[in-house]
Length: 134
Image (cartoon, rainbow, N blue to C red):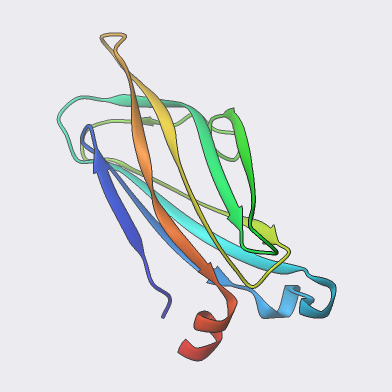
């Protein structure tokens, strides 16, 4: 069972569960594939629509390599979350090293027009630790 991470901001709970994919990775070529499942839950009383995402990906190769991924929605969707509702999706990233981490935020808008950021908890990507859990 892989670890999971969660954070609540502005009544939006974001839970992430990363996993190393050894069958799709090629360590000798510096190609480490990680999947992650994301659960976004509105634990408040007001609806909110997810507009954009920003991911910061840190690859521990060498002195550390960072890059950002920005865009509209998540996997092609901009879900509207009523109170108590959940949106889940899966995605992946590829690192050059067996270790790194990710974090970021989603931008939401309430029906009133108020925009806010819901922060994605920092989570570790660790090929060695995931292999040890098996």
